[in-house]
Length: 568
Ligand SMILES: [Fe+2]
Ligand SMILES: [Fe+2]
Image (cartoon, rainbow, N blue to C red; front, side, top):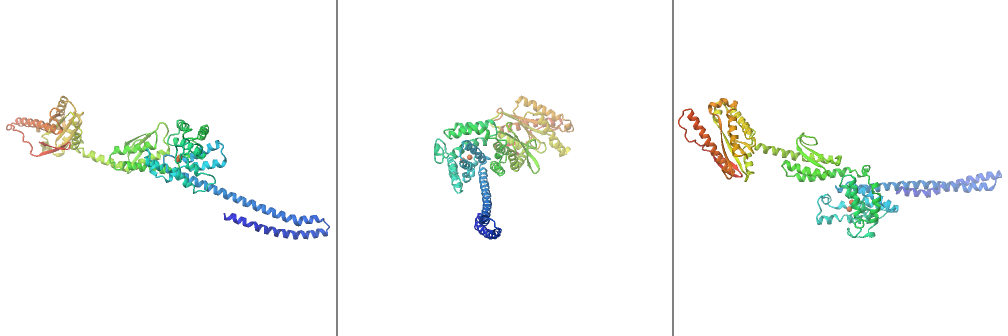
């Protein structure tokens, strides 16, 4: 503005210059006149030179100065205009970023509103006013708590009340900006309905400013398509929504105009204005990651983490099917410590996954990696706690867990004890003894292949938990004994009468619960063991066999959270 004032200040200076020029011109003209008079030229020529020439010079200089000043004014006005519209655009970006469900919404609403206003042949000022109001229609959302705007479930009564304050808040914000045309009124009324059931004032028909009526149609149309994939169905669905609201939610005239032009105005593939703005992408990713972080907080189980990640990705990529598997496969890797611990695969037959969606999925993979690695480690530790390290069979803890889940079911327990195992250890060493146990475990797995659980209880004792019939079990026990006794690796122990003793008990035939079944199977197994011992002593010609001396110590088995004392 200072430069304009300076320009204006130069005008009196120009007059002075002109007067000087006039004076000089007059003197010069007088000299010429005297000369011409001496030469007897007409007096008229002298007058012309002395009066008109300075006036012409002054007029030319003033006009030239005026043009330069006007040009500068014009340039300044354009600069102001540019800075004004870039301020509006920045505000629009901020509005867009406040709501992750919509991207490029404000620019699209502006584009559609301007097109409607032009098609309705409104005057230039009105069109400009509507375009500005459309761009800023949701500016009041900047004052609404973020959790309300990003909430995907329905809002509570209180949240709805807060959300409905955004037109008034928007109008208040905009009233501080001096627009050359009315904007705040359209922002205030953009959620009014034509039948008077809208908010905040419940205006009806023509009481609603024309700008608000236009924006309402554009807003509803884009609101419908923004959460859906780009397709003809989506377009038709949005138009159907607007058509159905004609006369109730929307001005019928605006609907009619929009219906006649929307096919040409809505062009997704070439419209760059609907592309997500970078910081909105970042915000959207942050929102997803934040909610994912909350979902997986405290989850230490792998399936729980998989479920939370799948849910987040499915919500961010509408219409997709998401699968997460352990280990490295084809898809988005979940990497921890340089190792691929899982893979996310996403499929969407209706449309390819775009870059933004892929970025969100990658961000989810990065987010879950530490928690998933932890959960996998815990799972592995749990698995190791239920596995016998020597034989690879499940251990006593696995039997306790399995029996806890078998309430009221019919099943059998087979207890297995290796005969003369101590003698093998004493005669051939503990390494050979261990190798023998590994082979017996393998025979046990093969003989009772259909068992629910085959485990090593400890030492030379094994257990089979099976749903097979007693008849099948008896034949499996016979096969198992033969596999052990006929194993060529055990040939050198034959002189030690190396074999296995098995005791069976079934629920409900022999016992009512696991505890009783275990005790019953244990007694039967020892009875068999005792018979074998008597037989072996008789064979060696030793004194007659006596009742087996039961080991004095007791072993405890945790079954279904109760303690079972099993004499051995
Ligand atoms: Fe709104
Ligand atoms: Fe909106």
